[in-house]
Image 1 (cartoon, helix red, strand yellow):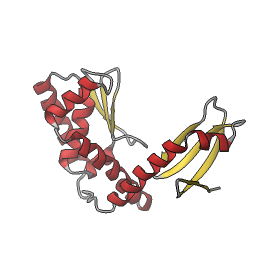
Image 2 (cartoon, one colour):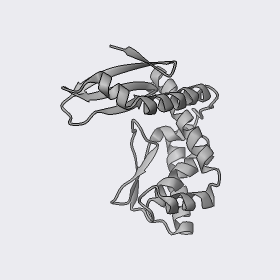
Image 3 (cartoon, rainbow, N blue to C red):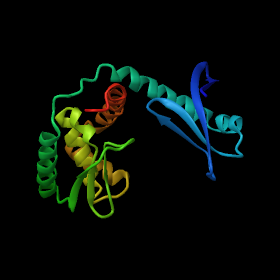
Length: 191
């Protein structure tokens, strides 16, 4: 059941889910706040403790939702064409930059465009194919940087910036594209 809380004059809707967990967590799933709480946790206490974070995140989400309306998805791009591009780009960029990966897999993920594992597997969300090529290149490059720098530290971002000077803008756009994808996907799960 959806409830709401007023934070700094902003009405924020949320749902509460109780689970057998030790610590509470707050999640934004497709733009909605979900409190995931231990069975014995006080809802009001958690809301009060994370009040500032909730407010900041809500503003970011609302901006991404607003921005997502103007994002054009490339719905005509087929999976085979996308896979061929990703495979070729990953090999090319790895050779140029000294990145190493063992294999590329494709799997729909609920919260990520891609990931890079300790076993050097690059896993790519097929939904990425609906984004412009520059964003696909950025996501693949970003993940392959993890082959030489595991954490998102200063060195990591310096390496990213060498190729994508506007990476912060791209990261913001990717956040908006995620909501554009979710909006489309909610209406048609076959694509």
